[in-house]
Image (cartoon, rainbow, N blue to C red; front, side, top):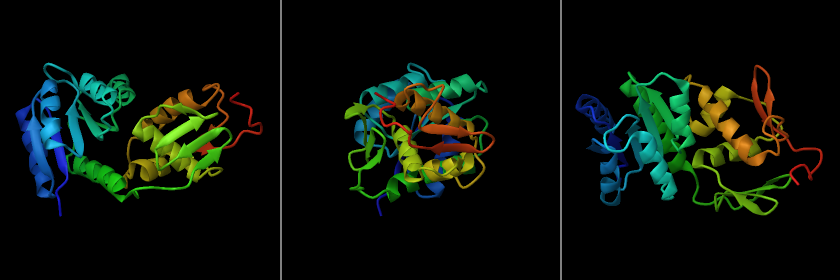
Length: 237
């Protein structure tokens, strides 16, 4: 069996060694680099399946690295590490394409669990899902990983696409934040549900006519979210 590859990017050797040890313990191949520019030198040869990326790095910080990767259409999953407690810093990471974040100090076992969750999700997905899903003028094409509104493509991050696809497959059902964490992020433990709210907010900005008065992704107070089809299919016209 070919080992999955993890690129660890952190300028603190003690943290890199800790992550390296725990990942190798469960069978991953690991490469550690120590600044943002080294990421772009390592990727062509190492070809990581996932990147563990510290926010505060020399040369290029984690946000800059993440943004540049996405601009290059490299959608390798990224888990961002941050010593900053401010939610705005975490949201900045998600805004620029990170799939998940963890706050230092962190449990190495939890980091391994989150990595394995992402690996299970990306590895378990079939190569193609032939059906096209419709909700009003929104068309979701799983095989191409494309979303179109009135036949015009819209740009979603990989996680936004998976979230919309999951909601669409469960349309009309009220889904709690924890159910969305489990279904989209594959978390089997109690996670920080704010990550769900952040992605819902970004998704609404892209598919709703008025994100403050959503017609598709409806908030169910004290419970979670539900994807509904508007009464009028002209609502996005």
